[in-house]
Amino acid sequence: MSLLSMIALSLFAQDGAIREALATVDDETREFHEHIVVLSSQWMDGRLPGTPGMERAKDYFEHHLRAVGLQPAVEPRTGHPGGYRHPFSLGTDFIRSGQAMATVVNGELDEFQGDTDFMLTGMGAGTDGFAGQAVFVGYGLEVEDRNYTNFSDDTDLSGKVAVFFRFEPMDENGESQWSNRRWSRDASFANKIAAVGSRNPAAIVILNPPNCSDDRAESMIAATQRLTSRFPIYMCSIEAGDRLLKALDAEGRSSSEFRELADQGSGPIPLTNGMITLEGTIEEEQQWGENVVGLLPGRGDLAEQAIVVGGHLDHLGKGDFGSRRGAGQLHPGADDNASGSAGILMIAKSMAQAYADLPEDQPARSILFVGFSAEESGLNGSRAFVDDPIWPLSDVSLMTNFDMIGRAIDGKVQVAGAETGVGLRAIIEAAVEDCPLDVTLPSRSPGASDHTSFLSREIPALFGITENFHDDYHTPDDTSDKINFVSGMQMTRLFADIIKSAALLPERTAWIPRSDRGSGRSAGNDTPRRASIRVRFGIRPDSYDDDLTGILVGGVTEGGSAQKAGVQSGDILVGWNENTVENVRGWMELLRDHDPGDVVAITVLRDGKQVQLKARLEGRDTEG
Image 1: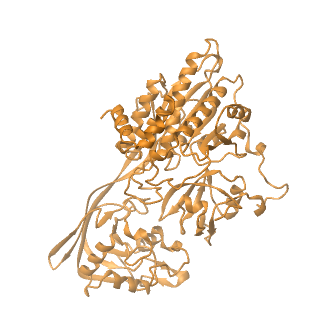
Image 2: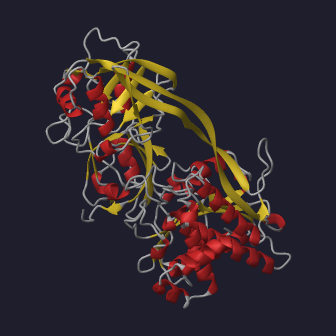
Image 3: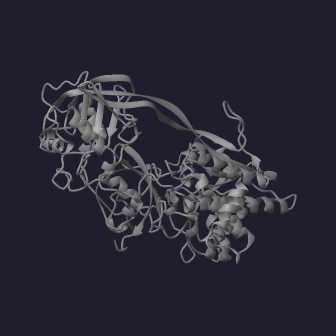
């Protein structure tokens, strides 16, 4: 099906209220809306990098850059033809094949179903085939400080499969015995695999425990960070774990009975009633992403300087990571960030026409229009853009970024970053004069999106985003029918005016160091004072080891910024925009540089895996 057919079908399916509203607006606003409808449609499948849906989204974006006359911007390189695509590495992915699990009791084979009953995970290696005895080792833990161990002094798992439960000892309500938050740090996969791995198992099978209060016990993890390359690691569902234990235990005990033993701190229990067989291979495959880039060439003495106009094209696919509701459903990402991507396409069209209408002798900067990829997984596309630039960074005078511009309430929007470059505030204030939106200019430049990568290279950057942070963020409910397309197009026109003014300035926009913007630090005092922090995040830091980086989240405030962003008790906060969170003291320093309404990109460790989230910070006097 052609892209134009997709547009026609999508628009035909809109409800009457939307059709009536579209009939009252101008052609540009209708086109802006059409871009969002297509990019957030089922054909794009959530725009997850590496999927066919993302390929279709990149094709769509490139098609419209070409249609307005933009030129290819990327020189050919080894293994890549260049053109409109800027390739970058997304690291390696775990490719699983041939996974199998079965029990053999009295010569009878009971096979388990892959991806339903069990999964070969990316935490370990693969195996060409194994058949042998299993040993139950509780929760796979040895915690001296708690006087708890699931091992005897002479436990040797050589040639055997270690079977243990996920999480840690629980009470009768299925909650941790050791912590008043969800789980202690002892429950991490890394701790368990280190403890069990020191006993030389041939393989590990992790069972989701029964009667557990944590809804994660209903799911399995196929891939996460590799924790060992010596043996394979499998996960089982609650039902499959019960079936496995009943089959292999000489007494036929259920998983609930085994959980009671593990909760009491039982030692190893050989499962002698039969054998377990395991198969499955894992290969690491290099994964690639692509930014889509089109060039509007400049003119005269300013042509060698460039402005980057960008926003991320990707989203979460079916919610396999980053979702605030869980995996399995399509996450359309209409606001995040089909709205920003649509804005870029509309600005590319208007700027191409504006350049065509300029006097022949008018100098103008070149403009790179970019749909970044893999922003949701950690600003990968924009980071690659500055690490492997297609234009000398010393000649990039300004970057503008759009992220979630489609859900303005009462016309309230933000243009952040005015203090990052000389003369930007004057340009913005002049453009705002003719703008019907309620525009605020935060005094400090927030992070949380692709402009952060440019700020880290001391390139002035502006960030356009709506004032209010809606609850549909990173859920299946971020759909195109909720877009305020009129205000979204107004935001787009505002930035088109800003970009045109910046493109024609005789002098380039010079970087203003953070120290010259005012840090809020009290003279002669390096200790953050509570009164100097204007925002609240809504977490209660818990105790943690001094030799570990990050802040252990002991509790999350109901209705606060952290909860709305999807932060959970038990997470470890390790990243804040482009900064590493070392400890509470360092984090407070970062908090002091923010104003209410700033949006920040945060990274947390959850079950040994990095999770990328975004949060809008509230003022200290905000309820909840």
